[in-house]
Length: 455
Figure (cartoon, helix red, strand yellow):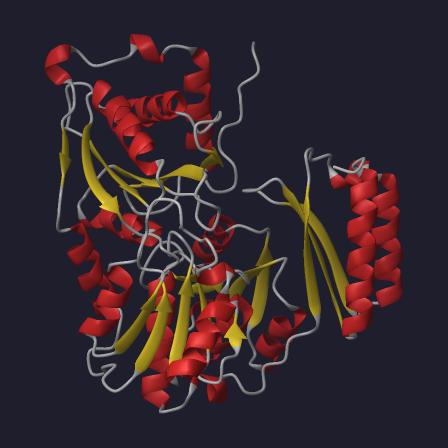
């Protein structure tokens, strides 16, 4: 039996646009395969909803996916630019049988990706991804198309953004408003460039909008959550109450307090855990983070009587652990925060709204709300790689890691892993002393480069 090509990574299919696997041909096949998996011959008519961010290549993949889906006798709804969490919501709200999001998240414009949602708004389980890959590899898709009279229809709808805005507003307490607050929002020239400012304005905030002029090539280019210093500078300039920096598909947010301090997912998890716990709304007495979550977060949660559950990196793994444990709060250091009480995936706008709700309920500034949370010094170095040899097969690197861990004597951590979305290795080191942490991280990054032959 021939080897089945792996198309799906940790967050869908991703790569450089117009280069395998991110080609029109693969997108067509993915559309055919997902539609075939959903189709019930002679049964209920199925429909799949497709959204995208603002990348130039989104047009190419949108139409290729639609063609593949329709060829299998399944209908298509196209909504245009829409945040990834918006697609998770719409798949449920519009009673679709699946949702598709075309985005490479925080990557540059020349990359793109395709990820699927089930009818309940969750990302596809591994077993279904594996079936899709096997079906594409089999070469049988050409023989499985619908008869001429059963070909699917494609239509575009114009009110999807409005539906999502209403949904977002309903996650904010009805007895509160944002009247009198000034908020800086950087939408990264991405999918939230319209809905982001709109929802805050409709709740009463004065919005200073950045990154809301997409041109197909400027998504994430010096803007958004990868460059929060831009948002911080604007917060200080206009004396805003809060800064919000989204990524290209708006499933993550990095926030900035009124004094210009940049806050990541660990800060926010500590904030939300305390708030939910104090209100008796934290389910299970646990919060889900990842192996990257700072030890300072774990200590802060322990002091509150809350357990931190760690998963591998990737919001899908966080969500899986939350669902298995019946929990309602989890997230990643990168800014993916998942409130399962509201949505099935990370949602940067819900993260911002829940922060603003806490500020309004307590009457405190964000900097005051985070007093007492201290993170351990942590250094993350991204090392570009051309091959991903398993770490355990690099003996000199393994020895260097073991030596570093012995030197920390339980007062620090080392984690080296390959990215699931980019050709990079992540070297993370944390401990009590910033200078030592930096030195160890640089040494391990150098050793990794040598071990991989300078890639």
